Image 1: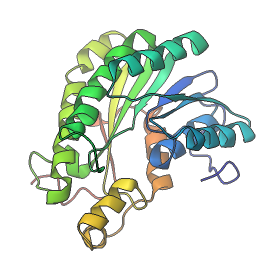
Image 2: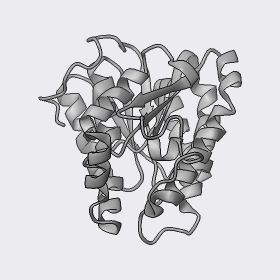
Image 3: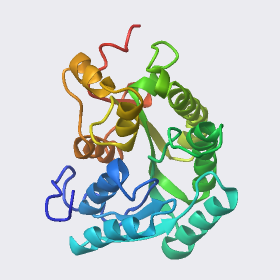
Image 4: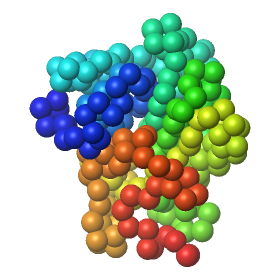
Length: 259
């Protein structure tokens, strides 16, 4: 998605004056989510791990469309890097109104054996902890996950995705444990759970490890959302009323619920 084809998924100006951080936003769902938020008036931090040029392009697209953004690199599994991320936000913008916890991983080659848990559980909880002092009253935290992870305790997933799914569910549980504390501070929390998303790096890696897996899931679900469609739902979750059980489902869940 570029600055010329960003649809208005939120009313123009709906987020005027708001400050947002979208983790893992140099590409894919995170990048599109950031652009949707910016199109609604928010100024957005584009977070990346090591692809500065790619993050700068997202910033450039937002600025070309009349928005405001800045790119900040951070290894979210590293405490010092997380501190530097939030210190920069504090210095530049004084706080946050929207925190979208989108970054995830665990299927990459060459990472530590427990990398999935480090990123999908430990880093998510640590990010929230570090963000709380910066989150203004009335702010919103959004955690992005998949149906395969959200329902992993009751519905098995593909072997190739199991470790990632369990680590993401552990991260979700760790965040949910803070809901009452967040609410007491005037901070709302919502999980956005979607099916496998066409065009994501996770889908690509799954297809590489298990050829035909995505087509099989597409047939079971009827259709799969693409990156931009799912990102639009994540962006809307940042402002729309909190649904039951703090969970916004995107796409078919009939094969997961009631299992």
